Length: 253
Image (tube, rainbow, N blue to C red; front, top):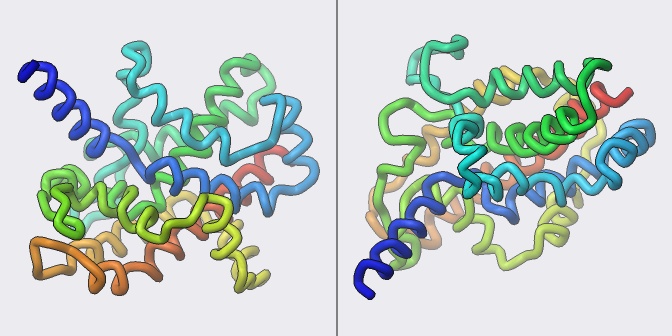
């Protein structure tokens, strides 16, 4: 019995440390992205997937982590850029940037099979969301905050988990409610700008913004940390969705 409890505890820790934005966060990104898809993009995605519900697709890449056949994909969700450095292919751990490029190319290639394109799309809508979570562009020192053990309102957790799920779930909103809440103050000119941004723009943003994630002085994070980071969290969710829509609109012209 003790052995079983230990296994469950380890499994819980692994689920906390390996996942990116939690399911709610990814679905928020997907819901926002679908709002700004062109008709052509929606039609082509529906032809490819049988539907164009992006929020439904966004969590698949995390769900398959329990499948041994996809163990090799665990490092596709993040990248590493040490402080004071710029992104350089192959220089550090994490393949998220290169995988985004690969999946975009695969989706644009006529010779790609239906299955290849379906898998590429499901990974793409997930990883673009991941790269907007600041701690998914790690500094190479603490596994994107996973090694920093702290508390959230008295509950033992880690810094990465706070940004993946705790801050989002604290709002007590469904993913559709949260997405619609973020879209209330719509700025069309800003949306067009974000849709046009390149991959390395938001990767470098996350590298810079992750500094704010580490700005706390207490071991038990509560209201103050939430208040100080709510705006950043919500801006990254919004940017993730809008930039994902821009990428999909370019792929599926």
